[in-house]
Every structure is written in structure tokens, then in C-alpha cells.
Length: 388
Image 1 (cartoon, one colour):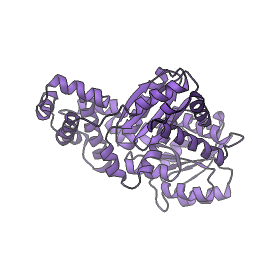
Image 2 (spheres, rainbow, N blue to C red; image 1 turned 180 degrees about the horizontal axis):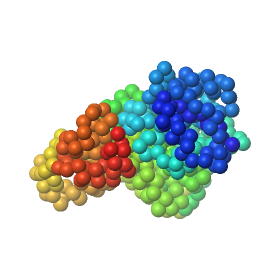
Image 3 (cartoon, helix red, strand yellow; image 1 turned 30 degrees about the vertical axis):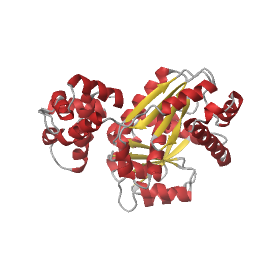
Image 4 (cartoon, rainbow, N blue to C red; image 1 turned 90 degrees about the vertical axis):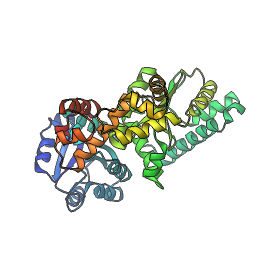
């Protein structure tokens, strides 16, 4: 039975979490509760059998981030799951950097999602044998060498036997035939600006998000570099499902979209290496049209009259050409990008200001609350009133 400690400074939240479902019927025992990180550490010292800490981020005395950082020193075997009202990418970056297993918005939490997550964490913690760090390091080193060989064109010079040997050392869970997808952040300059000298933090956050949707027994995911990521799965439908889930989470937690290139089925490792190389090189820098249209949208999203014709005039191309080029390069329609830009700003205003919902709707380019609420729920999965 997994033992959990709940940490939150709001008594109502503690009560809600404890009564969310019959935890013990699912093999989960709530060992106690604490109102801040300091009290949680004292509880864990008294109950070293705690497996999982479910904690809020913002708390007095010691917040959730400080708690997670302390646990890495005191008991690194404890898994930390953050609950927060904040979707700000800086919070998420700090959360995963501090050692979080996962990060859930309170607005998105329900019995099913939380129970499934806790069971997944508990199952991972209950494995009889943990993978030795040396084995993990060897595997990651082999994967780095494999992708370096792909990107540097070494595959074309190697024999089929050498390629097969290198692939086997990577210990991927898939075998031929399988399908693959390469993901790339849609705005690399923005990533560089936000993370500056901590691009590894961004890379770790992306890989951790991917792992949420790709269990090791069902496929593989990871980083080629901070600006390219891979997904290997047995079927194209599974790839699409994972991408859709990840894409939504990336906007929620990182405030950025991702482009993709797909390939497969890989009949054998030699052909896979060549196909993967072509896929990795298939991303082109955004065209002048896309750069100009994105900039115009980001500067004028608050205008309710903003439409394809206006953006096309600014970008100096026809409406049809702009629509086609934007979708081809970014993987989403111009209309979807406008909506995401507006809702991203709306979420920021909801989190950081005391503006009323109708005022936020007006500031983000919506003529009425009804239209705003429908768009908000489509993107975030919840209504503006529940988000706050």
C-alpha cells in the first residue's frame, strides 16, 4: 500500500483531497497532512515510510518548491507531486528542477486524473529493483551517440551490423517495425530568451512532460537536443494521441507550441537511421511570412476585428497563401494561433490581476463573454470562472 502525505495551507483543500475518493480501496493510505513544507519535513522524519508527497506550491513558512529541494537531500526516494493554481512557465520550470515527479493544476484536478497519477507513481516506487544509475547512464550515453551519428551523417558510412549494434545498446523499448515523430519548439528565439543560460531546465521539463504520456512499456521519448525531441511508438494512432496530449500540456505548462515531423514504419534499423536523419533535418527556419504574421497577431490580438485578410495585407501575401504556408510550417491554423495567443494572455490576466471576466474578454479581443468562455474552455479544458 502506498503511503501519502498531503501538504497544503488551505484546510478546505486538505479536506477535499482526503474525501475525493476511497483511497484505501485503491491501495493508497493517507498517512497524514501538513500545512506547510516545514511541518511536512517533520512528519516525514517521523514516518520514513512515506512514498509520495502531494503538495501545494504556495505556502507560508516553507513552500512546496523548498520542500521538494529539501527532500532531495533528506530522502530522494520520496516522489513529489505538485498541486498549484499557477500555470506560469517559471513555476513549472522551478518545480521540475526541484525534483517534482509531476505538476497538476488545481483547476484540472479530478478524482480520476489524480488517482491514476498517484497509482502510476506508486507502481513506479513499488518496483522490486530500481535501475542502477550506471545502467541508466550507459543507456543515455548510447542514445546520445546514436542521435549524434544520425545528425552527423555517420549512418550512411556505417554497416548495417554497426547500426544495429548501436541501436541495441540504446535499449529502446520498441523494435521494428515502429513509427516515430520528431518534435521542435515552435519559437526557438523565445525559448532562448526565457531560459538564457538554463536551456537544460527547458529540456528536462519537455522530456518530463513527454514521459507523462509515454509509459516505458509502450514506447520511447526523449531529447535529441534542447530544440528537438523524439517519440517512438508501435502505431501512428498512438503517436497522434500522445502528440495531442503533449501539445496541450506544452501550452499549459511551458506557454509554447511544438511543430512535428513523422516517419515510419521503420522496417529495419538501417533504413530507420536514414529516415530519422531526413526527419531531423526536415525542419526549416520559419519563413518571413510566418514571422511577420506571428508578430502582427501578438501585437494586435486584442482587436476583435483581427482576421485573415488583415494579417495577409500586413504580410504582403494573399489570404490563401498565408493560410496554407502558416499551417504547413507550424502544424496549426492561423485561427488556432490567434485563439491560443488570446487565451494565453487571458490566463495571465486571470492569474495576475483582479479584473472581471468580461473585462478580460474585452482586453483579449472578444466581443462577448460567451464567445470568450467557449474559446477558453476549448483550450484549457475549464471555464474562466473555475480557472480563477
